[in-house]
Amino acid sequence: MTATSNSSGESLVKQGSTISKIEFLKQGDTGDYESTLIRGKIVYADFANLAPVIVAPYHFLALDDLRNVTIQALRFDPQLPGFVLHLTGEAGKIISRTGELRKDHRLTQFDVLWHDQKLALIFGIIVWMGSVILGAYKIYREIKKHA
Picture: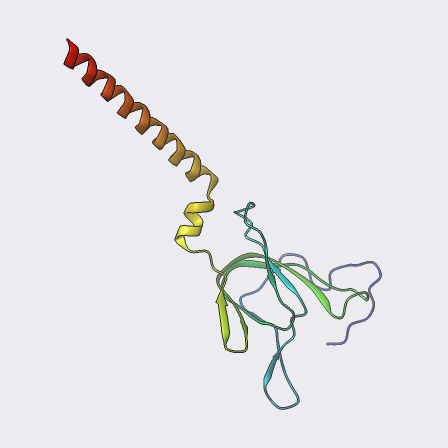
């Protein structure tokens, strides 16, 4: 693909284009696959309190099991050494790799429970109610004991 300078910053694809698979790879001079990723950021949209994951330059990034993933922007920026790609959606598998080291960036069930603000509120209410009920029961036992 040959890119021309687009000073208006317009997206090179139609916004909202759906994709099912994406690879950030190229075949190097020796025939091995190389990463084309210059930098990346993974954001967990449903968990605003989680810090974004920064993907280091030239790490391999695999996005698989994509659900409702759309291209929001694909544009050429002459100030950067490549294209700017903005995707939204849900990836069932997010794995980065450098050399033999692989890192899975999916949220575990524990992460989901731990960072869900609604569940944290419900858990707080349950703990509060439990302590109030326990205190009331102890007071009831003391009153019954002295009566």
